[in-house]
Image 1 (cartoon, rainbow, N blue to C red):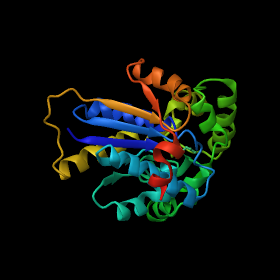
Image 2 (tube, rainbow, N blue to C red):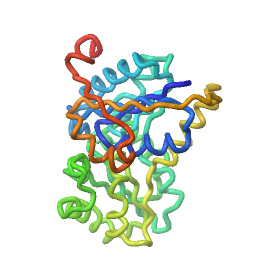
Image 3 (tube, rainbow, N blue to C red):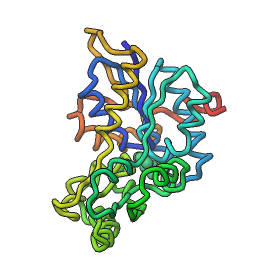
Length: 272
Ligand code: DGL
């Protein structure tokens, strides 16, 4: 059975993992959340690239043939580099769904929520250049939101304040579409919808990434015909209890999380 690796700075990628498992059940999954270094969004590109490389080596050591970079910031910093460095692996990366937003907006005004690393990346600028000619884009980095979601605070006052601060000025500018450019943010879609109202489209990239993974599996003749029971392993470089609240919400306590020590288990060997 093919092993699919999925990684993120933290719990955001678990949302994608849940949907991959539901749509593509005949695969084994190895998930890595780099909670020792979350948030990635405020870090430099080189640093994010080096973490992504370490994690990729770990996932390769666990026999992953396909690796989903379930993180916009890590994709911005490292997708191109990882594809060149590990040509034997099939990488699927993320980018903010600006193209989709341009297709659905009527007001020609679109809000994008993503971390600073994603906005700084070449990838983001090239998508805006290619697709957003006649559309005005309003950006916000939602300072502190990744931390709230890591804590499992999906509907508290602090989380609402961050989202209102980002979204209310966008609504005043007459946006009718919001792009979620960070894999942590789908966890707060209910609150985003409460703030922006039902007339605003909220674009969650999860469906598109699952379709893309399905496509690459087909193209590479990796369709699953296995009748064995698949398994999912979850690793964190942080504390296991940091991942447990969200893990419990998503998988009802079916999956256990194991601690990986960045220095000893991934460490120098892996990072070099
Ligand atoms: N989930 C990540 C993303 O999609 C980044 C969150 C962070 O660590 O800043 O960009």
